[in-house]
Image 1 (cartoon, chains in turn brown, red):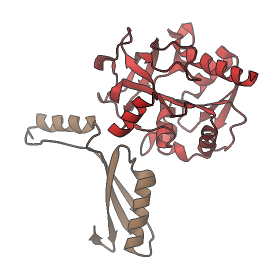
Image 2: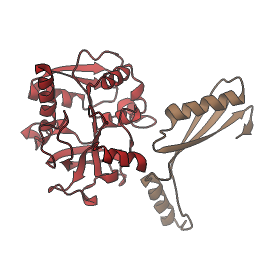
Image 3: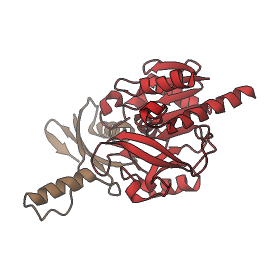
Image 4: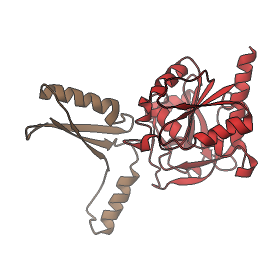
Length: 86
Length: 234
């Protein structure tokens, strides 16, 4: 199975990267952009007996390592045999 | 009095800290390799600056899993002195030994410059040689030194007096213009509720000899020495 994890800064955390990217987009003429937040994409391939098991394990991975709960939020999809589920 | 300086792959301030301990203070020094779960009877453990494990995933995120860190956590739990400097502070936060986190400087610039710090707690083993409200001149060197904690944690830190150093101007006034990285409340260093684990972003080991342009950092090292000597005399 493949877990596709997205880690983003919490809304309350200052994201100077996001601000800078937004400014860059504005300079390029994309003035309609109101906000940009820059995060992280992590792909985890794992063996699991079931999708539920995979979900529980990946959630634990996120809580213990992949995301720092003080400053980051996370979400992920589990994919199996090409069929995606949330 | 024995200082242990932890070395991870990517640590770069170990020799600087070791130099101050060994050559300036004349105290006993041990380097503690990350893979060895052995603190070698040290009285104060220093986690120095650098880029442990290349700052992979997040600064300090991987370092907390090193065998030596389990011993450091146990040592801290028993009341032992643990001193995290720069990357060391980041590691202590990731390891949960200190609250909050260090994030990218708000300017997105790596800041390598002198700062002024106002001392909020002069009653700690790390600051007893200082006066309260004294202003120290100590350099920073970091790209991810902006201290962050959620409002509840921040309120608790302030109420408990756990903020040890704040970025200030030369007069000790805590102002936004004196904040080099966007840290909440201009926080440059904090201590745990017990007062035995200190984390600070500035580098006291880089200003412990007059040739380096300042000796305010030496006060913190001397504080730890005096604390240990008092403990041993009891």
